[in-house]
Image 1 (tube, rainbow, N blue to C red):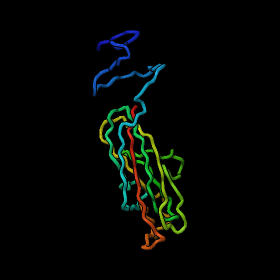
Image 2: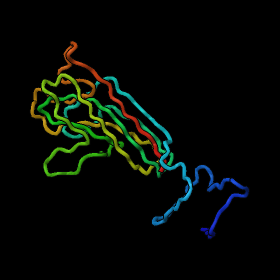
Image 3: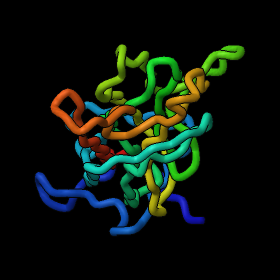
Image 4: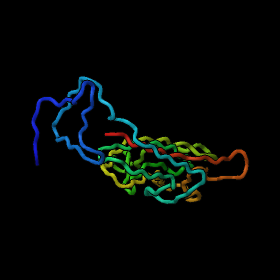
Length: 200
């Protein structure tokens, strides 16, 4: 490995540009290095790409471990240093007797779930559903992920019930309530997920 030591690198002409490497190159900054910036640094924190998906139909699930709702989106980060900002607004319906909620999955890895606390149920977002459970409730979630990858990643919204206290209504739903009667008191919703690659 070659090493160059100098106190200053300047462009050839006045107000010129100094370029480090070429497209596709990786510039490694060792641990413990500090950048002292007295000017204007650009590029860090910049949104590099945005991918979004909407689910307008319904899904259902009757389990007590997280399972995908079908609301998901795939993104391929351009650099391992990038972070992925995830925003989702899933609309969930479940019986008020059954404790239920949701989280994000990175492929099959659970994200943004609360720390273990004895026998308590763990979620990213959880709600006690309204009496009669006519409609859905929104579970807005955000999370900043550091996948350290340039491979395609699928981010998903997952849901589950922690317990099924009312076995007459043993399902959790996306985009509909549990009764779903065909009149104006009952509704359908749509749910969205958006991911943004943020330059590291």
